Image (cartoon, rainbow, N blue to C red):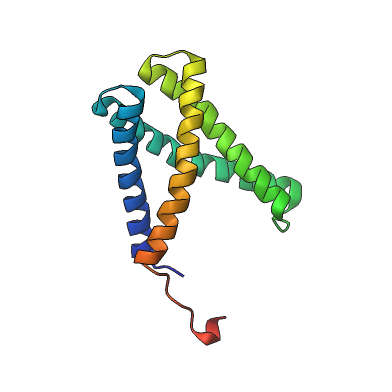
Length: 143
């Protein structure tokens, strides 16, 4: 298990790097000033954290009421992931359309591209993080 300090470092580095990449790359690809894409990145970060909290809380309420916290197999985990991402894409669609003053179709394309970017970024970031800060190995009595 990673320590609380390690988890905080993981989260802060993840967000700082993500917002910086989003600001710079987004500015270059979309043609907006870095301040505009940087602010959008900050808003997306806050949106994702709030959505994560709310969605998982509601999902747990549903799971308790309808499944009595039965084992979460692959189907439940897949549904959880898809519904989480769908909710984030819908919320992000309105955020992008408002902030960049674009139509919903353009906002949707930007939103889907952003989601694809973060899918890859999350995989790469966590792999690199584990290389730089390896998780502690459990003692043989903990296995």
